[in-house]
Figure 1 (spheres, rainbow, N blue to C red):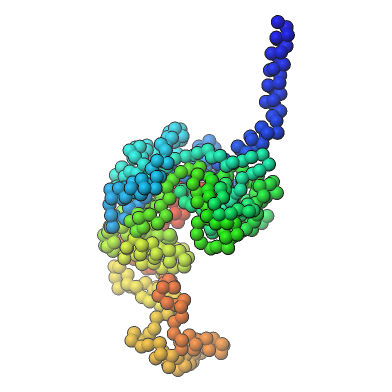
Figure 2: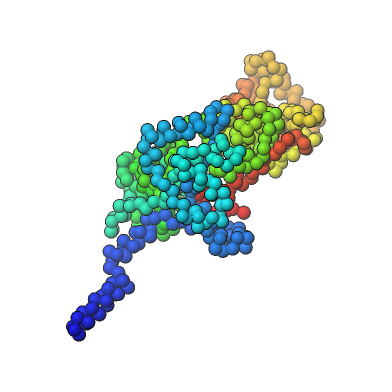
Length: 495
């Protein structure tokens, strides 16, 4: 009896010691499960974080921060009602998903966590009722019948094939790339920052995220040279910072060498994501637009009407601009302004894709949107005020030919005379010195005509602003409904 008791105590002791002092293999397995998972911590600007903690309380703010690091359990699609209907889009999407097999991969959503965090989103119950009817369904919120939800699933636990002393091949992507992947996108070449050695086309790779870290100058930065080789060792850049930042597994479409030589294309085909949401790249182009619900609501709340003149002061990439134009039935005028040349070009491209003609784009800083009445007459075009005969002075980078019917040859013949007259007039009126180099440069420009960069397809119009009372409605969504955008893996630069 005593022997049995001693044996039992010895067994308890060994078990306890094993739990307290796990074997090296157990340590490695536990470490791998903690490392190769998705458990990000959202970092905020300290001042913004303090403000939100005071507003919401530390517990509620922690819940908000955690929710922001995860994508929505659905994809939100805005239908171009000028080309099609929500019912037609639902039928087409269901057919596409049946052909691709995506419908079978999308699992039922676990709403337990949503119910636990009900205070985060008061409208979630309405969205839930929409989603439970099928993987693709029309929004039931009054007035938003042109919105379609596509159900997703997650988070899923992924086996990355970790083995002791043999970490999986890995591709490190930028934070913005990762945020898109979590919403269903593939990994494209520009988003790849680093990669393991000897990665060939067709290899299975774990995909991790490089999130901005504090820089020596007090700011934030990645500190990774694109093309860095990952060894899977603690000497790798941001090895410890990448713990819990693995977003899925995929198959490489290019070798390591080709990934960093190419400028376009898919680098990794994501076939095993932590969050499974369908990709809508090149799907029903012109008929649908993938857009977050807060952005759709912002345009809907503006309540645009047919024939109105509306200003979108921070318009890129054009989601809310095109939403406004569609709500107006493409009747009226929507002025889309943004201070970036490339972003203005993106708005033009999206408007053309959706077949909208009432959108006019300008390169303009919203802080300078109010026009001064004593505008310059240099390189300007005039735009009438909607209510009276006042004009809005707009400066254009385009250099259209004067004297409508004259050709480039005619301009070239008169270039010397015109240029010399302009120079003499400027000297007489302004009494400023103009170098001979500037004269020769102007003469060559007038002689040769407008160059490629001055062609209609290569430049965008600048605007010096608009007079007061020029518009019926104005939309200024400067942060682009930023607190409603999910997922967000970094907020350290938000102010």
